[in-house]
Image 1 (cartoon, rainbow, N blue to C red):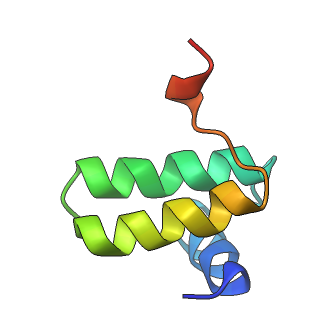
Image 2 (image 1 turned 180 degrees about the vertical axis):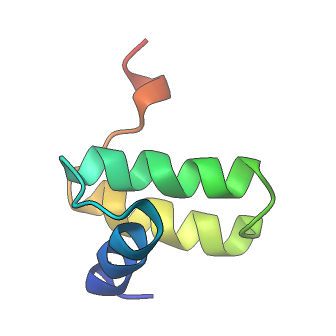
Length: 61
């Protein structure tokens, strides 16, 4: 999955633009926890977004 595709899916689902790349990562983390995407797909998404500077909300603590 490409970065642009991740953003398009986010907008389609949430009906709004993400405030930051961090929100996109959190969105996909929620999808993973809810069982809507598998571990391999989440891992790819995580590494792609993380390489672009995204930090998950749980990393702030």
